[in-house]
Image 1 (cartoon, rainbow, N blue to C red):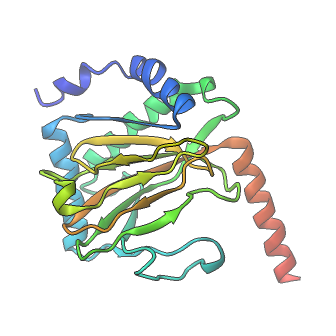
Image 2 (cartoon, rainbow, N blue to C red):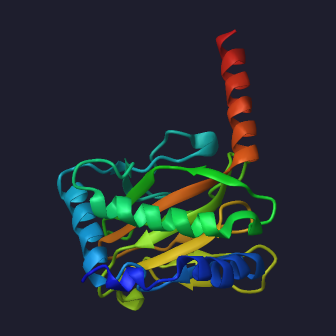
Length: 234
């Protein structure tokens, strides 16, 4: 039974005894062998199909350069998946498990109250030495509080292939290097506590990212955006 591995995972225990303490102590954590080989393969195959069918587009830069694609700063190609699309059942299943983990974290995430998340961003670095320069996912209070990345790269050798996600935890004397290996699930705070970069990749590198929103900050960000839009129209 291919789902046996997942059914044995106690998601509530993982959330409360591992994810929550790690986020509060160091700001990030990851789980290996999350889906297991069989289900992880299903997700990988769907992501490869999206790539080969030309569904991915150059990632855009946020902030003052919003909407601009500059390959030397950000070299990934992306698409957005809700999980309900045809053929995306395995992705939908993965997202439902991550949702449950975050839900179990609940009120233990400090000031955050999570009610919603983004769609999943499927990303591919094509392996020509492209990466993503050091940046913060949410530098300006857009509502994102937790970044969650699922990696899909079999037989990844960081010495050979590069592609390491390097986190620079704020106020800490160390950096954290996370290799993008198959079936690894990474969590970290999305704000200025975790600047990070994707180091140049020399092999095709796949990942899927979702962002969870703090309800209050998200509502405030939407309000600011509406006010800004009205002023522009006036």
